[in-house]
Image (spheres, rainbow, N blue to C red):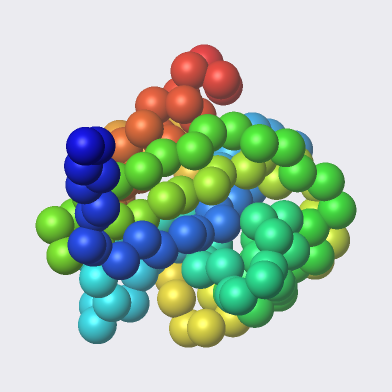
Length: 139
């Protein structure tokens, strides 16, 4: 008899964009204080809706959060992280071509930072492998 252990924690699938400008700066945004890991900085994105694919969710979320239209993206990394109360699956994409001027359309603070400056910001724990992947790719 084979026993399969099923993780009872909910898994949240999230599309994440590492948005890069012409100067190789990266856009980060500050999570609202009332959210999980509130007050920390993150790479913009959000949860996939039912029946939505990752690229569709990424385009929708970046339009809603930053008022930009994704023109070109490419996969970077997939991260699964267990926070104890939930598991997040971060599907992370480079966004190297977009239309519009990004701004915090939902009232969040946004900043363009260099790769070297990423270490100056506190990110959610699940973002550590993303920061490392960005540093490796752009250093």
